Amino acid sequence: MKIIDKSSHTPVTEYSVGDVIQDSVSVYMIVQVSLDSYAAIDLGRGVASDICGSLKELYHETHISGERKVKATVVIEGEES
Image 1 (spheres, rainbow, N blue to C red):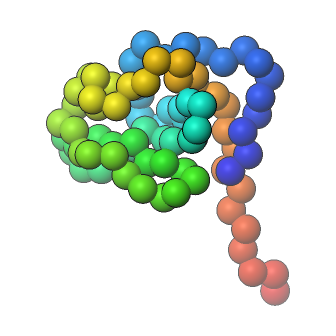
Image 2: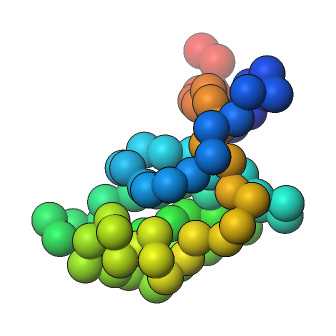
């Protein structure tokens, strides 16, 4: 995953599915695990946060002051034929 840094990061006030969040030590993505379950996946370590029943609950349980939403590009590499 490539993070596009244009130094205009948006402060985080709530989470949405698909948000890529960066703090001082990691980058993670907000995901929907099931119909009413959400988690934050640490993209560097591949570890999920505790699962929460709403995005609002996930924000209140995992938000860290100084987080910023960033733009990210996902590149899927496949085997060459």
